[in-house]
Length: 412
Image (cartoon, rainbow, N blue to C red):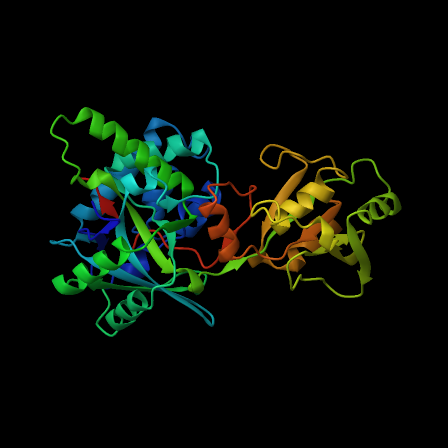
């Protein structure tokens, strides 16, 4: 079995991409999705967020929601809005957000290699979210949400992908947020073979985003394999939909923290206790960290620059992460927050919203303190994954996001 394989993608018919392209299913609430899809009958949100076509308040994990997704997908296929390529191929996917450009390969990645940890993860998953993705895959008999992967340095692969973009695209759309998504097909047998061989030679791929989708694909594969006495390993359920970018092109933004209260401390007591692990200085302007070990803090209308004391930075790939240093030396011992997954006193703000969002949350009285983080790097992520360790929750915020609807992987 190969690490990746070509597949016959389900994609928008000619010139239909702008009507179909949609944000990922997990970045919008049901209410937001309903607004975004208003007047757009072919938006992929009708498949990825099908509760928008059911009465408000419908349980998003209920059977009618998955059934509606399947009905909507079939309707788009029958209407010719979505078409399926006749033969397996690879696809090149480029995202342009402002000055940032990233170009990757869309492929069917091996579930077996995921199970063996050659496709490496760095996050824990939640059973309820896995269950949701399993039920969605089974209802659609398709994987519609791609997993974002990274491949290590491979200039030859980069060159093949770049060359493919000289041809006419098969999908091109500017999403509501102004981000452009373009897809090209690679149908040449020799080029397909070269790409397959190049990835087979790689020691590993790395999950950047999509841990629940990949885990769900593994569960679906195991169930179908067990139920299929003629299982050969060549069935489409042995792979999962992925978009694989070179690690040096992926952009990780800061993933910031806001906390409801100071754990019973006065502001002066709080700042005094911070001094045991961090140097601290006030700032007349916003503090956006520019290096490892630096944190911006906003409390009571005032910004501070915190810098972890060097002797407290360990070599362990997880413990040395900025998000870990903040948890181990401030959130836990000072603010009493030890479970980032369950503690209701903490919330997380993606860096795409900017530092003004942190000020807004604190100035409104909703939160007492905000922390602006230095972004986790791809090198950090890969080191953690190579060590078979797990990052703390909300360690990475990838931007731009992959779009839904441009390519789906059918399982039959």
